[in-house]
Image: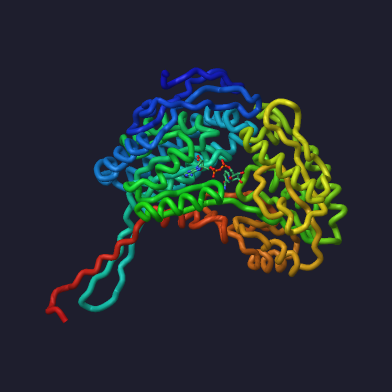
Length: 496
Ligand code: NAD
């Protein structure tokens, strides 16, 4: 197999798609020479095949990352690390059209959303590039004859495992704080969407990163992902994906070398609309909250609670609004919703829709496949839902939401918190006091007021309860990637 293939896409024509594993700044085949097919979710056709990493490749990548960590990367100044990230951000900007087209082709997201993602990738790299030379310790005055200070040191070799819903953006969220703080990385993209990370790998080399600092290996979760989480020479694992796999990763970390773990997992986020909300605005944000990225968002606003005074009016207008979302070819300029990422996800979501119907919920709109080719699903709204229904408790990860009524603020908070997840929530109201009170009462890592899904790399993101451990983005993400060392110096004199 060659390690590059020519692919044709709308928007950019044809381009050279790398297909190997990116280890030590080189393109290599997998040790076992295995490959897997990449499917276009809009057409169900094969785009190409890429190399599949197995346990041996993880070992090879770890050796490269370890060597870089102990050698060249330790000798690089923090300012220089920042420069590499800034240069990489510029290269991402320069390749925005290419990276967006690859993302749309492979993931199925609309081209305009893909462009938004790639812009955010550059923003994230740049933000952490700025942090690289601002990681500082402190001095602690404990006694006249002692001098204590702390150092923030990189953890070492980091394994990172990411999902398919924002392929390159999740990669940027993971690698940026890790590299800024002086770690080296082995990252495994999701097997459903391996392509954009490989195009990005060429930019890593172009930005001048030394070999071994950042290694990208595609492969399956139960093989390459499991090998990363159980590896004895990986010092930290960071994961975004399902709660089920998050638990497995934590177990593997615990029973191997007790590597540090951060997890960003699922959600079932409430979106609460009060009687006094600006209805037009609330409908737009509720619509965006659930249907953005085809509902394949960990913080998607899937449980919509509307106060009884406006419920009927809101539901009618929301149905109309959701039916206006253009579903179709990701490369059409007006498309809002493309296909789900894979046959598996399509089947899983359709299964939830059937369960909702069987459980007695009412389908207000949608509830069916869209078209007969590609993994498209109609925007779907369920009403007459009960808190214990499966569609109210489990993460569907598709364009499916449930709407219900509440009467008091207390009830809204109780319903909003009625979940084992706690990733995000939102409140829509024109009363500042209500907004502040309810945002304090909701158990979620992010609460939006009068908006939804507005995530910015300067602000922390992560979950309460079973939505995860640790925070990504913002200053706190730097803590995930540094060890604190306390140095205590005795300033002479006799012992005791
Ligand atoms: P997943 O958790 O299986 O996959 C996410 C990543 O983990 C992929 O890179 C995968 O290869 C890897 N992985 C899988 N099994 C692994 C293992 N045993 N050890 C190490 N790594 C492993 O998610 P999925 O099957 O692609 O999607 C299933 C559900 O997960 C979705 O329906 C959705 O509910 C949820 N999900 C959540 C997010 C999120 O952003 N929180 C993202 C994707 C999926």
